[in-house]
Image (tube, rainbow, N blue to C red; front, side):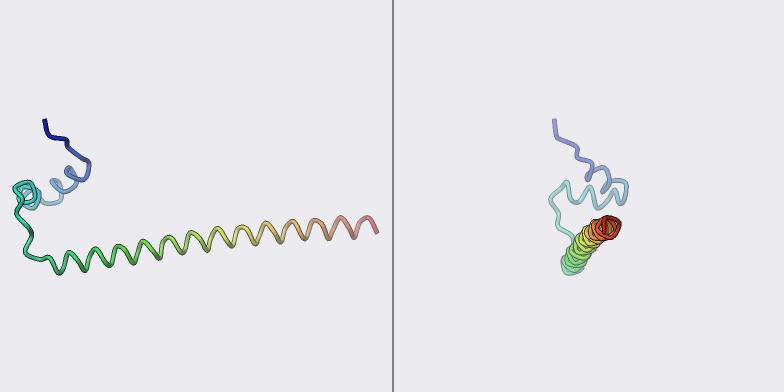
Length: 79
């Protein structure tokens, strides 16, 4: 019994003919476009990862600033 993956279902719903060709082992004729699309998705993934890292860095800087502000206010109150 073959394993049905969620990507197979998505491919079938998107284009039944392309799904059937893929199941038959027939390669698509637009390999260059597919490669370009893969590259674009890879670039987008890198940008998303960079944005997430920058967001995390911004949160860490904000927390560090709040800690320093708290320490400064406590020192000011004690003096």
